[in-house]
Image (cartoon, rainbow, N blue to C red; front, top):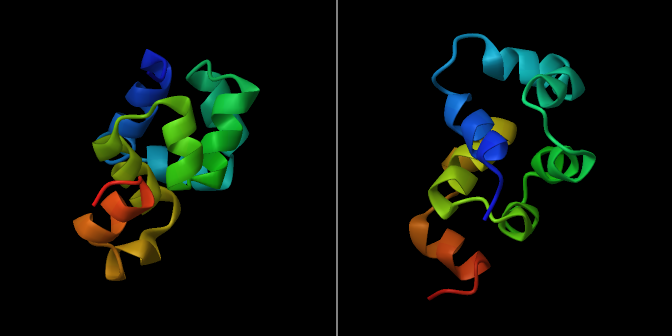
Length: 89
């Protein structure tokens, strides 16, 4: 399971005004503010289902993270396609 700080950051991406913009401008500063490790920051920067799953990020929060780091993905994402990437059906 991902550390609380990782989940808290992902949960706040669409809640805390300006956080998403700060993250796009200076991700390292945001990662430091949340006390993330270098490994956690790298996984969030990659923002792939595999990197987020390796951290133990909850699947719903993985989707939030993917949408935050790759907004264009909303045009192509479906639950079935995402579940397939996780090894589900």
